Amino acid sequence: MDLRLPLFFALIFITQGGLTATQTADAPRTFTLLLLNGKTGSPIRWRGAPSIGFPSGQTSAQRTNFFGKETVRVDNPDDRQVDVSVDFIDKDCRSENYERRGETYSIEEILKSGVVSKNFCGKYHAQPRPGLLAIYVVPATFKELWYE
Image (cartoon, rainbow, N blue to C red):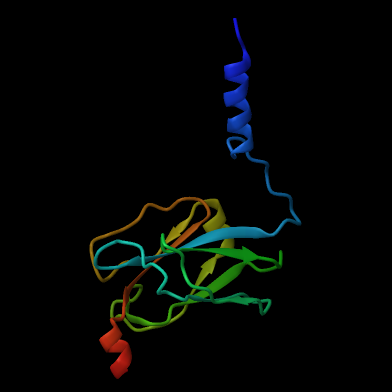
């Protein structure tokens, strides 16, 4: 019996992340921020620039990628919460009156079970996954941004 083919697939499986190592205590923690359209449930691509702040003073504000995701790195191990606010939006679906505001989330909860914000703009609701923070907003159109 030739074992080259099964060994080849096993090597591919291991090198492509099939087996992952556990995080050490001093390694930076990361989670994924996902911006979703509250009306359609689709990702907000390249438009959102969420402002992310930590109690230690670390901040981040980069655009989401094609899939509406941004990888957030928590460098300070003492940070337990993250503040997230989103610019260039028409409605913030996390509140009933759609006001733009920041909200604080527990990093431990995000990493352990995942957090999905409330969606007062529509019926869509993503499933929480460990390491995921999903936020619902309605993006502003170019016309709304121009006259704002």
